[in-house]
Amino acid sequence: MPETLVHQLKDPAARKALAEALHALFDEWALPQEDRTELLAWPGLGPEAPLPQDAGVLERAGHLLAIGRALRRAYPYQPHRRGGWVSLPEPALGGASPLQLMLAEGLKGICRVRELIESEQ
Image (spheres, one colour):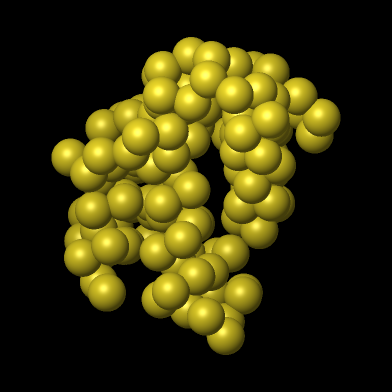
């Protein structure tokens, strides 16, 4: 499983910046609030609040942001492709979309999706 050090963040300003980055990513993916909540396993994501100092939430955030970063590298000039990739069926995932897998499997699914997109680069 790929690692992320985000779960070690203690600074509220850094955690607020992470929340803002996640908002932008989730907006790009056009995710409804319920999917955002489920992906983070935390209902409190808001535009002004920092992420909680919770290792599980921060670990998920780190992996999700890594997926977003990998998509920007894979499709630097195709924002619609970046935004839609998580919702499209993926043969490497048995025809499920990356979003379906992440929602169904939680952290394990998020890590699988991260490994998939990073392996394609």
